[in-house]
Image (cartoon, rainbow, N blue to C red; front, side):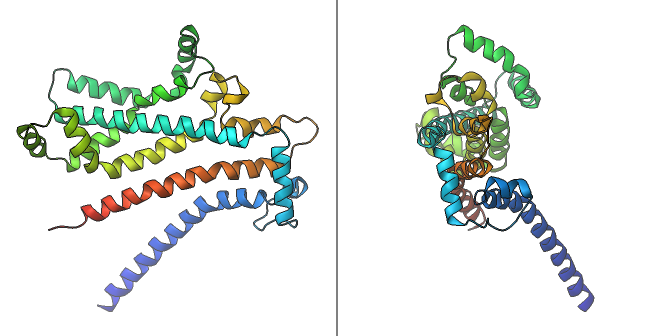
Length: 284
């Protein structure tokens, strides 16, 4: 009995140690980012540090002035990035959920072929088709526009895959049939019955979609040309355009500020995931 107890303690200790190591690996880069936001350019060039800079709050204010005095339109960048990220996230999770629902519930000719096509598209690198996508946007005169950054989010193969597998594990077709017998049409069934059921999955995919759209640099950099439409990652990249002196402290501060909306969105969405897990863990 003692050997069994000691063996369990050893396993638990190993699990906690691995979790602690993985947690440190995830936290340390963010911690270094926050620390560098409090340091001067000279201190950053001198080497890595895990403690704040000697200047303290005054150095943070200096970095902020260096950030804003170089044309860093942080309010406009926040608005542009938030608008694109929120719109693309809402469209992605809603229409992907609808697609996953249709593939799971309906039986139609070509269903398996369509599912295979979605899986094939998911395996293709997004940059592979970007040249053709850019040429198409140029032909329809949608360059320097938010539409090419928002509308393609509707066709999210990875989100469809996740949501369909989630529906396969929790959704009973009898529930759908009962709603149809009561006279509910298909859109009402999806909006009032299916969406509340898959809310934890939608919240999880919303986090991934929002973070991916917020941090997206390549597509906006290629498609957008107006400074007034630049996203926050584009503005941060432009801070390195000074040939005389690069204020790395200001750059790190700008990156740190850009993380705030991601943390807020994660905090808002994670409660839906936790509440869904809690509800699913209660048996009557």
